Structure formats: C-alpha cells, structure tokens
Image 1 (cartoon, one colour):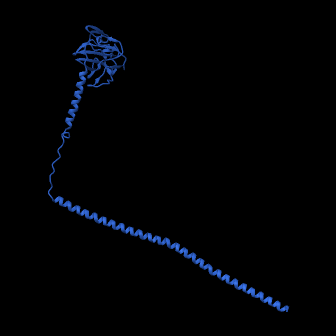
Image 2 (cartoon, rainbow, N blue to C red):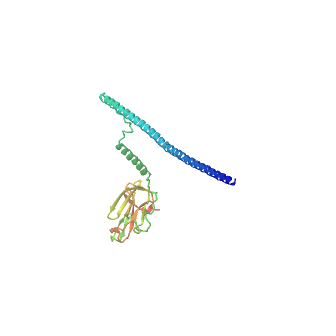
Image 3 (cartoon, rainbow, N blue to C red):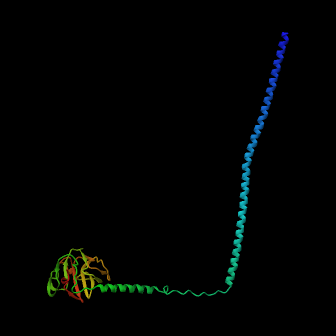
Length: 277
C-alpha cells in the first residue's frame, strides 16, 4: 500500500513538472512573437514620418514649379506687349516724320526779359550817381563850421601868408600856407571834417598827401602820411581814420616828424586855426 502511494506521488510530480515546462515554452514563444510585431509597428511609424516630409517637399516643389511657370508666362506676355508697343511707336513716329511739320510761332519775350546787361549796368551806375549826388549835397562846409584837430601835437610852423617865417631845414624865410603839427611817427591821423576823398598823391615836399572836398568849395589837405586807410571817391565822417604819420621829407628833417595840414577855399589857402575847435 505504501509503495503504491509513493509511486503515485512521483507520477503526480512528473506530471506537474511537465505541465510547468509546457506552459513555460508557450509563454516564451508568445513573447518572441510579440516583439516582431512591436518592431514592425515602430518601423511603420518611422517610414510614415519620413514619407510625410518628402510628400510636403514634393508638394512645395510642385507649387514653386507652378509659380515659376506662371511668372515666366507673365514675363513673356509683358515682353510681347512691350514689343507690340515699340512697334506701334515706330509706326506712329514714321507717320509723324512723313507728315508736313507745322511751324510754331516763337514765344514773345516779355519786356522784362529783353532788358540787356548794358541797361542793367547803366541803371546801377545811375543809382550810384544819385547816391553820390545826395552825399555831395550833404557836404555843406562854411565859414562858421568848426573842424577837429587832425592829430595830437603842437604846432611848430604856423600859417603865415602876410609875412614870411623861418624854416630851419631850408635855412630861409618864406610864406607858409598851412600849419605843421609835430607828431610821432605812426600817430593816427583823423578827418578834421566830413568830406569826400578827391585825390591821393605823392608830393616831393609833403610826401603822401590826401585831398578831401568838404563842400562849398572848401578843401582839406593832409600831408606827411603813410599807410593811408582810405580810397579816392570815398566819403568819410569827421573823426574817421585817414592814415598814420610818416617820416618827414627832406624839407622837414630838422623840424622832425609831423603832419602837414592845409585848408583851402576856392583853391586859396585860409588859416586852419580859425576853424579848429
């Protein structure tokens, strides 16, 4: 009895081992068969992901190709149109050249445009003449007028037309139609009265000399000058700078540097001291 039970237990264990082995083999085969399906799905997904960009690129190329084709067609149509317009223009130009030309009357120039440069210059000269004449009328020197000292200094030779006076450099007596005012070389010389510069010349006795019209036939003369600051024809106010005192000429070497100042009325000398304030 015990032997039969023992044998039965052994058979039962073998049966369970067999069933376990069969079940294990089944699970193993099932796992292997699932992996290829998962990998196949992954491959399908990758293939689809690659195919989509290619399809989009193909579609884009197709669209670009269509756009290029459309632009080429439009450019060709534009070229054809321009050629047609050019041909039409040539035909119209040929007709115009063949037709007789009508002479168009020249435009009449306005009187303002016909004014020549000579007339403009004459007008400007006329205006200057009017301005000059106006200034000349303003020069109204008279016997009662007063003048400024033309330079700072002492009178070393007085006006003397009624008797002769002694000149040291010349070592002689003679009449003197002006006054000689002692001044250092380089001293400023100013206009004694308003007037117009009528002449600038170099004289042997008085050196560089400026003549000024004062009005009513009066005239002022400034001698022994250098670096004259005015020009002929210039109008100056009393006190304006004329120039500077120069080295004395050979006629006044012993008297020293000075300003020679003379006042004329109708070309005749008068005593400047009677007019200086």
